[in-house]
Length: 221
Length: 221
Image (cartoon, rainbow over all chains, first blue to last red; front, side, top):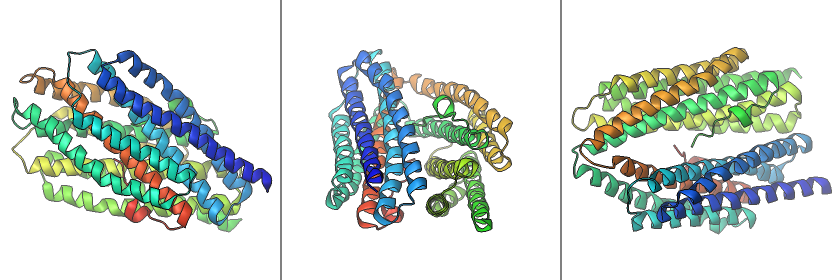
């Protein structure tokens, strides 16, 4: 049974390595944005490949642990939580990459102001990410609840900031809200297509036994 | 072993039920958008709860099948694929809900034009979703590859449509691209926070054994 314990520890270490990379990516993409630093932003984009690789490794490791050890109770809950956390971390990495891509295009354009509310929002979000992982590591229920509470704060600040940005457009263009809604609808449609492509890649894995995740899996940000 | 086979079939039926609901939600949200029909859009939003419940049921069922039956080879691949497809379907449901929410706010505003390119994009995406599930059901490798190929077509059409919408804003406001980039950055930060909240909910599940997914899990669209 010692071997099993060791593997659980290894899975936890992998998740923490991944979490460290994701936290750096979020922090770095926001710094690149506020510094108008396209070079730093490109480095963040390049680093996402390692996060994606780790997700696949962790996923395989957790599945193997489930199948080979038939864990129950707490161990089973640990592994299923690890599978989900792994997935959430990978998606956070994608979102940080998307921020970095936009930071590149913004840095290459005319000067703009990264207003204080965006930086405050980013700081709140970084805290949530860091605390959620700390809660996992320390099995800290109170800290986990703190993260859930912060979510509302983030939503409020996001809505205010979003509204400020849309109002700026509306100053010169009536009904800018409509434009932005339609832009998001188009964005969502593309993301749905990305999920359909994920399913197709999973079908190939299931039918052929070949893992096309590296080349075909779509990181839907 | 018959019981195991039966459970695999049941898991597949559940996924297909969920896929049917998700496909209706995507189709319905786009129809509500083009018909300026807020009532229809609200119905789509209400239907998402059932999709979210099915995700949790399927997730539990697949995990139980993994742990209790120690499947190998094809059965193992089927169950791990089912877990991932389940997750992708739930996220598609969230995205359709987000489209429906925007359709409500658009229907309540001044008249606007759902241009042909958005409807074409939606049609392409719906086809991908339907084909990806058909590929899973029929274990059809060629169909899965067709879906992966369509993804590029969707990206092209999305980029053109996105560009058209941003250019419309730019007609009256210079550097609208910047505004839109910043809006997406704010949106992404909120989604990262949503993933952190997911992790916190998983920690509570792991530490306390209580399932807070129904009330706390964040459906990050």
